[in-house]
Image 1: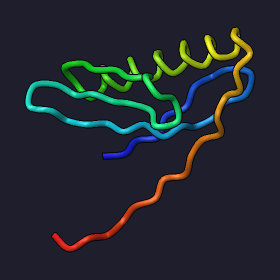
Image 2 (image 1 turned 180 degrees about the vertical axis):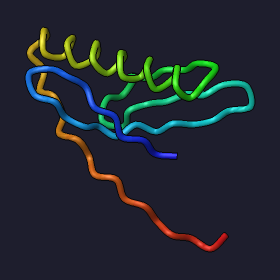
Image 3 (image 1 turned 45 degrees about the horizontal axis):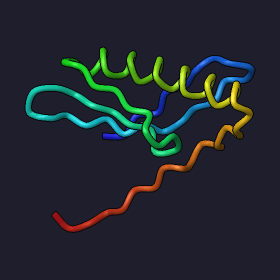
Image 4 (image 1 turned 135 degrees about the vertical axis):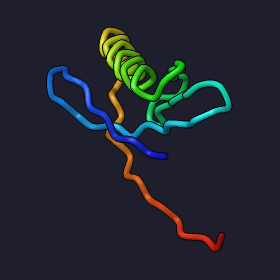
Length: 81
């Protein structure tokens, strides 16, 4: 499942996150931001935590003078099931 969420900062951008449903919880990560992850019991909690994690990650990158990556594009591949 792919979900795109945005965050507010100097200018709002939308970054792709990958949302996964495990046997007991949900987890998410942002391919554009290695190490930026979140997990919770519900999808909504995970999305909220992921948004917060992205905001903090980007704020930290700005404080360190690192460039903020441009959002990558989502591509899907159709395969035989």
